[in-house]
Length: 347
Image (tube, rainbow, N blue to C red):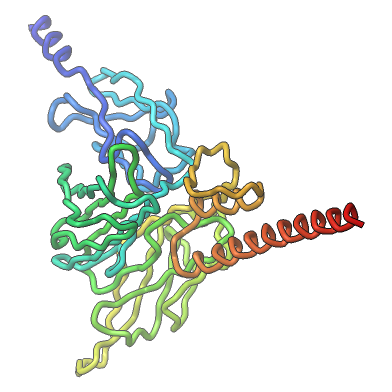
């Protein structure tokens, strides 16, 4: 009997898997770590850089990947450990951008969103993917040849859906859309917030704008309470990274009940992306041909660490325009000096 038990234990040799994107993990990605080839119902322990993690669950969820998550992971079942698996979280965002054009990061079940994929090098050879319930399916992009393309995936019928797009060389950022049965949701920009930039969180109520009071929380800490449905962070820092929710008091038009509704939203995680302008981060802006180091820094910053909201795009566009004007001024000065030397030589 003892030998039989030994054989059974040896059969279950834990192995490691990463989903949905095991090849490249960018800042802000949602990552699931799974301990494969283990007995059903077993308790799984997780180790990070050799230290036991307090999380005892399967799968292990990294809600918002950050460079601090880079390291070696192991899982343990019945005192049997998997081989160490190294995860590297890249400190920059991919150059191709996937965003929500219509809809929100949290939608009601059965609703749908419209996504936009943008890539400066065009979209020939690109496909998009959807991760639902441990399964990955392809979304074919028909006639997507320009730099930008809109598409509408199937209705949202599960609690969490992850979208991304890729070609043979690289991929876009992830977009995670969750569903809720609640009337209230917390709206925030789905890509990582940028250090130093402003960010607005909004408490939304489906079907009405008659919100008399809203309270915002980070974890269990109350941030603000007001009739305003927005909570603005003037300048994001790393300290803003965390989980947020809002509590709304509201009424509906036409309802005779004098008692207002009071609902707390589901929790959402806020990722924060550091401001990186260092070219050694391997971020590539393929069309940057300026010789000015400062202009290259601006371009790299736009591609590596910028939230793609209209507010942020405007400020960075202004920086680029100023940079171009500086280059034109330098060129004009050089031409003027050359002209003066030629005239001096002729005299």
